[in-house]
Every structure is written in structure tokens, then in C-alpha cells.
Image (cartoon, rainbow over all chains, first blue to last red; front, side):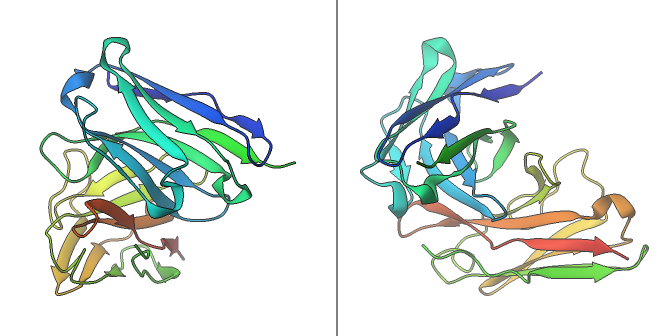
Length: 119
Length: 111
């Protein structure tokens, strides 16, 4: 069974940092693009970042550029999101998702992990 | 990188059809056939319903269909059922930044 499990969420003060891991199973992780999508409380989905199979290509939404870093460890079947200089507006549920092969859509999603930025 | 525009809500009675629009620009919806649609129940992860504008993943009922004209994509739910009551989001590839942009989301209510 294909599974994506996020963790690492929690309460962090403004200006703080947090690292979100997403551990995957049930498929060959190293052959897929991966992505992070977030959803602020009561709001819509927002695409955050994506990374290619070997980590050599990374793309970000403007609002997180320079603060967030997407990475992956193919040996550990894990995707990561390092979040620095956190702001209140980064408060959201963070989902990791897989892009279907050679495609432009997300076919499998994790259940999400909640990040709250507040003093 | 502005969100795609969707109506805030649509509603219909069981058995009726509803259509959700998703309006973007020539840099996203209008420029590529890479529009996907996701269904989301409260507190749950999104689920893929339509990809590449018109294609349906296995397991998704055929009452869900997608289309596109110029800069506007649409999701139609025919023969509305109670379990279709959820939030729906469109998503498009955006070529200028090689990013993705989601729609603002539409709540579907079954009367």
C-alpha cells in the first residue's frame, strides 16, 4: 500500500524553525517528483514547493523563497521541509504529496501535519 | 502567482448536475492541459478526482467530468449524490515559474 506519513509539526514562535519529515512506503520513492502543499485554518490549498527525483531541481512559491528548503533522502525514503524564519501566516496543515510519473498532478497525499506559529 | 478563481459555493439537489468553474490566465490554465481537480472533506487530505483536464483516475465515479475553454476549466458533477458534498479545488501548472497554483476552492452543498 502506498503511504505518505508527515510528522514534525507543532507550536513554534515567530522567527523560529521547524523541520517536517514525510516518510513514504509502498513505492520506489527515488523515481518520483515530490511536493509540499499547505492549508491555513479555514483557507484553501496552497502549493509550497517541489523537488525532482535526485534533488537537483527545486521550485518554491514566492512567499517561502529564502526561508523554506525542500530536500529528500532517497536512501531513507524521506522528503523534508526545513522551515526557517517562520511567520504567523505560515500557520497551516502541511501535506506532502507525490506527483504521478511524468505528470503534472498529485496522485497520492499524506494526512498532513499541523504547524502553528504563535508567541 | 495568484490563486485561480473559483465560485465560493455551488449547490444542487440529489440527481441534479452542478458545474464548478476555475479561471486563470494564459500562463496557467489557458496555456497547458495540466489542470487537475481535488475533493476534500473537512479535516481530511485532498483526493485526486480529475487530471490533465478531462481524465479520471480509476475508482472515481464517471459522474465526475472535466473540461476547459480558453483560460477557464470546469468540473461537472452529474447525478449529484449526498457523498459529493465537499470542498473542491482546481490546480494548474504555471509555466512562467514552473510552479503550481490552486484555485480558491468551492464548497458543494447537496440540498
